[in-house]
Image (cartoon, rainbow, N blue to C red; front, side, top):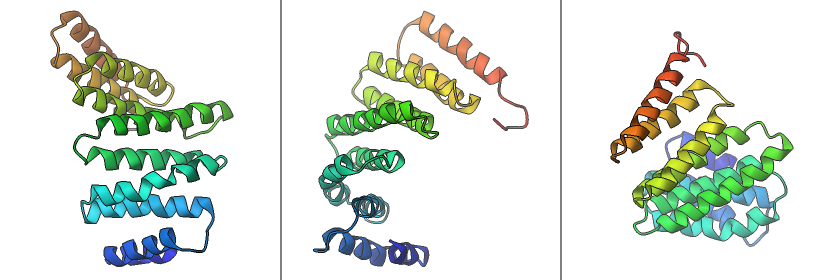
Length: 203
């Protein structure tokens, strides 16, 4: 992983990709977390430098067994499902698979949050936002609204910037509908959150 990072830093992404592929294809078994990290980074580089969503997906999908066999490492698991969802996002006709990956990530967070995991709320916001996008793409406004509301409840325990993201999301969603009541309520909520934003831009 260090060699791959150095290649990428020096501007040689293809060599970085080859280094990571060597880890994933090695006949000598390595630590599950190391392999999972390598696969996540490999998929990220493939999407960034080659736009090859299929190859990125193929590198990640087999790693679901690794996720099941790793104890803890909640942040790494969330990164895995987030990256897998990103792979599905660039592939036409994979909304169902993307939603499944996001929900699995959400399940990881909901289990971890009981253990007082400090990053749990941030990942909850991330997965709820992504699930909102999926619902919007599917034309399911009800599910999109539900995801935004759930996300906003989590955001209220973080900071006003997160709250504003979800409040604006609700306003944008209302623009696609015809409910004046929903629009008024969402605008009022957005205004209330905006009023609580610090003038100096700090949360």
